[in-house]
Amino acid sequence: MAIRILVGVKRAIDYAVKIQVKTDKTGVVTDGVKHSMNPFDEIAVEEAIRLKEKKIAQEIIAVSCGPAQCQETLRTALALGADRAIHVEVSGKDYEMLQPLAVSKLISAIAKKENVDLILLGKQAIDDDSNQTGQMVAGLLSWPQAVFASKVDIKDKQAEVVREIDGGLETIRVKLPAVITADLRLNQPRFANLPSIQKAKKKPMAKMSPKDLGVDIKPHLEYLSYEEPPKRQGGGRVSSVDELISKLKEKGLI
Ligand code: AMP
Image 1 (tube, helix red, strand yellow):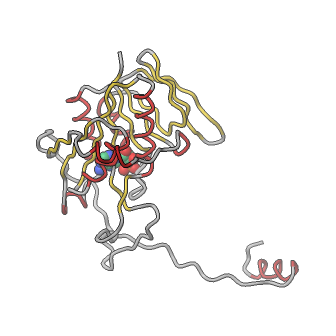
Image 2: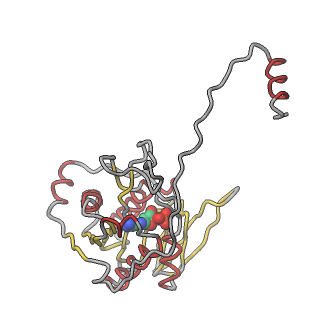
Image 3: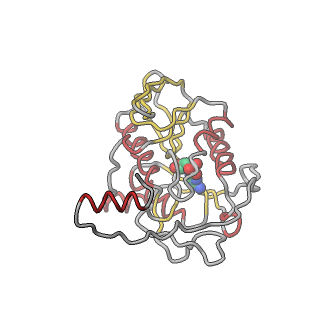
């Protein structure tokens, strides 16, 4: 029996954009800034598509929680190969304060409603670097988790997952339903081609609110301040190894 997969896709500031902190330090500038699908989520979507191509998966549901623009991110997931999309609309101040616990509750509620066998997420969102959602979704659902996956094999409702850990690899087996989060080396995501972008426009996209899912998205922590990293000072040139050593000694570095 083929499985059903939920893939989480977050709309995040594009990885190539230089982040700017707002002058009042309450957040980062997002207006007029290029956004894209979180890169680890592209890898999660790719993994789901490969499972469908191998006939292990029968359906891929892409989910994004955030403002109206998340529908563009969902359309990208549909163009890549997801079958349908669910947009949980959270905008304005609510979105600014949307935290991983709330997202985890939303994703868990959809997973239960849709009766999925596998939740594939990115290991972390590159904007907030939280690395919490996969773990919390697994906790909320009491499902096993295999995070930081660099290889996934699914057979007989079990997943064998290779995980990148300090200094090596760990292979674990989890029973489905389970949560898997994608690490960088899991796969190389494909690009969407024009015909699939056109086809994606006709794929179903449902819209719902946290209330429809019975989820309270109240924040549990308060952001106090954002700072840019200190500016790097320019380097200098030395004319010999002896000069380099005496400079390093002068600075107390050796
Ligand atoms: P984080 O715990 O915020 O680092 O996010 C880890 C993963 O959870 C991301 O790579 C996404 O797959 C998923 N995720 C986080 N936020 C959202 C969101 N707003 N909508 C959909 N998926 C999300």
